[in-house]
Length: 232
Image 1 (tube, helix red, strand yellow):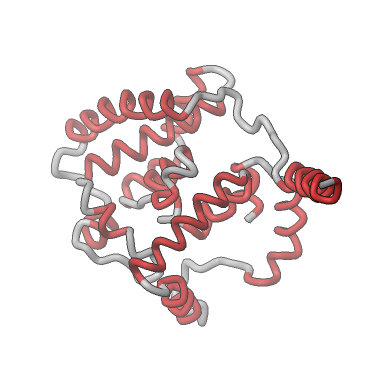
Image 2: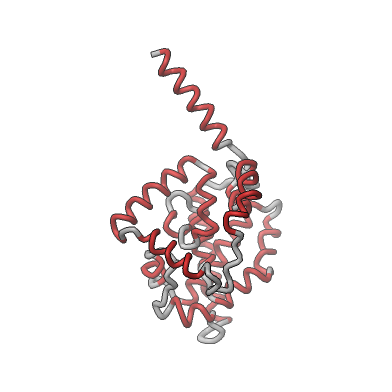
């Protein structure tokens, strides 16, 4: 019994070392409150999208890829079922509501949560019609919204290292996804290797060389979702 207690204490110390409790956000709302606030924000943003955009100015990628069912092969296989639940205004509403909620959680003053709505990266995401807003919503709802976060795994995957519950949710969902879609990660990696040969000009990854900088930063960022993704 004494031996088991020693092992338990060592594992506990290791757990605290790998997953330190950090107050990474300024305002910690319980998940049900975040969900309620998201829907409160989503409604006005959806309505604003219908008034401002109507049937004009739809994002290029939304028109030519997502709404047409053309999903790039390096996206996870559940992307299409999720996208099919949305229209253009729904995508805009999710992007703006998730961004505002994430900023509100991290802001010093509620008014400062509105500033990200004026930033060029957010406006570019909207007018391009990209899915970053869905991934951000998934990050806000970890571990329960793991499938949404993994729509952009190249960034979001590092956030799962912040909490043991996030890693558990990731492992459970990946296991289920393999049962449903088969070895989809191998197919995605095979596509990435094809594009890594210079066929995809937007691939600016440093590859293995980036690990020299990333690994120390990942260790120093333990417990902080934002810093883990930035380091990755």
